Structures are given as structure tokens and as C-alpha cells.
Amino acid sequence: MEDAIVLKYQVIDGEFQRAGEVSSDVKHKLKQMGVPANIVRKVAIAMYEGEVNMVIHANGGEITVEITPEQIKMILADVGPGIPDVEKAMTAGFSTASDATRNLGFGAGMGLPNMKKNTDSLDIETLLGEGTTITMIVKL
Amino acid sequence: MTVKDLIDKNWYKVINEGDETEREIGKVFCCDLLSIAMGKAPADCAWVTVMGNINTLAVATLADAAVVILAENAQLDANAASKAAQQGVTVLATEMPIFDAALQIYRALNA
Image 1 (cartoon, one colour):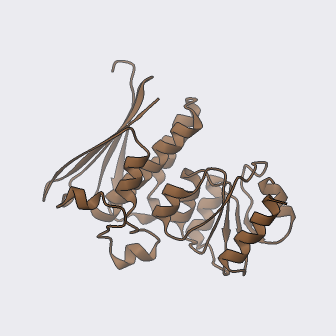
Image 2: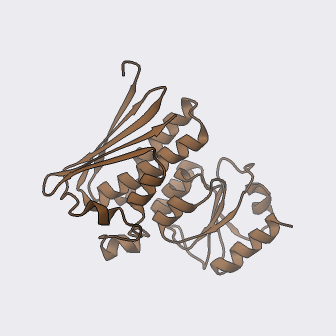
């Protein structure tokens, strides 16, 4: 990992107006590094879903992105309520988003499925009342 | 058909002319749920929607949509308008229903 480029970001709770800023910045940087467009798009989509989930459900948190010549690893760590039933949360269409969130166009229950679809690996560590850490990898 | 070609047809009001108007439009895509749009919108699409909030702009940018068309006279709020300008996203608007606007673009793409 000695040649990894590491980016760190804070995601702020409830900041719908700013949701997507981290993903946009990472996308911009990956493009500048010459990462292929299809890979950049996958990373941007997976990260945005994770970022929005942190805003909607998890009181914000921290995103770390590690870029090596082999892969892009995204670690999304929050101290939110945790996910009671991961299998259910992974089901397309299942959502616990509020009506206010749905009115903004979110809450279709596609967040985690989109993250899985756009990454080569997705790992969820969650503890009720403690928080959730999601690690996603997109291979280059 | 490029984004500029679509603008030049004068079918739609130009809310924001973005940075990449020479981009070729691939497909037409219709959806108002952002998470579905995020997962399903093809890169380079013309995305027709009635959602005019700031998150629409984020999804358009991250999913690589070529242009956003707001149907049913949907408006961009002030934050979204400023985001569109900042991110260089082309946003057009029309009073037409989503289906009609999408069909019009589809026909132009397949003429």
C-alpha cells in the first residue's frame, strides 16, 4: 500500500444540499488521474449512494478513499444507528427513508443494491447503536 | 445529435448551458426517483424528469448524463440552478409531459 493515494472526507448529518460533494470531488480527482471513464462512473455511483445513506440514516460520518494502481477502495464509516437486518437492507425496493426524504426523490430502496452492482466487493460491518462501516472495492 | 443540436432546435427553454454541449446524446432516460436514476441512467443520456432539486444535479453529474430536461414546467430551485452553473450541467425545461418530451428527443435521435 506504499504507493496508495489516500483521500479523506467528512460527511455532515442532514446536509442534503451538500450530498454528493464528496463523490463529485473523488470523481473529479479520478478523472484527473486518468482512471478510465467506466471505472470513474462506477466509483461515483457507489460512493454517492453511500454518501446519501450517511446523510439520510447515519448522522454523517467519514469517507476514506485509497487509490492504488490495482484498485480503488472506499471506506464509509459512520456512528449512526446501525442496520438491524442487512439482508433486508440489501433487498431492492426496501427502504426506511422518511416521507421528507422520499419527497426529495430518494428512498427508492436502491442504494445498497446500486452499491453492490457497481463494485467488485462490498462488505458491511454494522453494530446496532454503534454504527456501520461499509468497505467497497472497484478493481482497476 | 449533440447537446448543442438539441438546444438549437429551440424546443426547450435553456435554464443552464453547460460546459460540454458538443457531447453526443446516447439514449433518452425517464425517471424521477433519484436512486433508480443513479443506478439505471445510461452515460451520455438525455434525462427527462420533474425533479428539479439540487440532488438531481448531483445524480446527473455522477451518472454522466449529457443533459437534463425538466418536464411539466418543473423548476430548478435557486440552489440547484447555482449547482448547475457550477458543475457545468446543461439543463433545459419544457411544459410538455415527460413522455412527450422523451418521445420528441427519441425521434430526433432515431431520425
